[in-house]
Image (tube, rainbow, N blue to C red; front, side, top):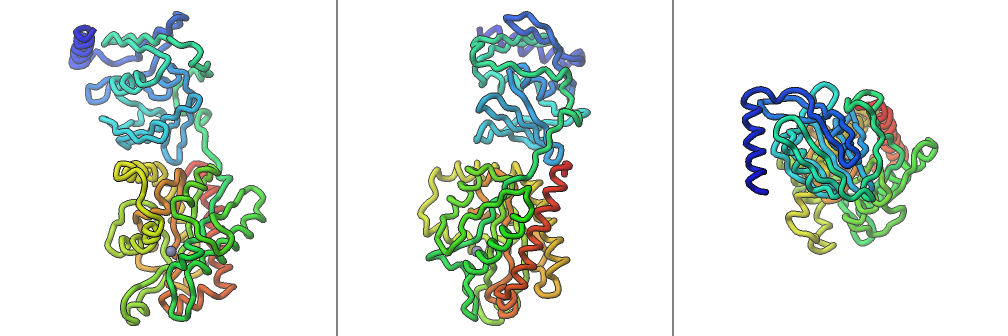
Length: 399
Ligand SMILES: [Zn+2]
């Protein structure tokens, strides 16, 4: 058996180097005997096949999100997610590295056939045999497991095939709470009170927009762990997660007076020391909750999971920044460049676009005063809602 495999691989290599590997692949579906063709292309002398058509062979349906250039293939509870030009994919909640990145050829994502065969062989219910050249046999061995898939007739990620998700459910996260006051201002203002006031206002404003379901991670002065916040958002299958905070500058009064303004963050490795410090301060509450379960590997996976929505999160950050600039700039400035990237635990593990807003510095007397004013809080909440509605409109059209 092993010797045969080696021969097949050798045969494929010869065919490719001879340049005869172009053209579609003929697929024999067994036991029905149906013959269909799988779109294929030769890229850098390697045989690539269309990913959605390949997954259809294995009984999957698929959705293409043109905004995030993300292909989701589903069968029952199984889910594979491929991202254009990104060298890993998601198998259910697991992140798996890819030897080659999925490339876009025309309107379809392609991957090397050898990679697709490796992935296909991890899926139960089918036996895959490739003759090394032109012919692939897909044999259904457990018919009960295979659900019939609608044949679209074409693997093209055409506008008809494109399914753009809609934004319906939001989770607004009021930072800190209960025994965790968050940052404290010179006038006695507590971060946890500001974040709750603004979160409640955001919910009230959005509730008037009948199209959205808005949930808060807390609606009173209570402690909610960082992990529980994203867990709740995942449980509710939220489309957006927005965490509201207020910033703090440690050190001398001079330092405190110098640091002011809002800033919007999305999840990523911190790009500079200042952003890293903000993340460290907001993450400090993790210490109160005890060590993270799962260890380092889990951290890596959740970091990558966040990246699945990096483009959307970044887009939402930009829209928030624009709204703040337009509505708030006369009262509260923007801190350095308006958008930051840092690794916040509270965003870690959220399987949806997610951002963290530092509304201003409670350690700065001027910001502290603004943040406690009701009209200012309302303007801030309106700016957040404006950005959410803009994002919803843009996302539903395809970013
Ligand atoms: Zn905070």
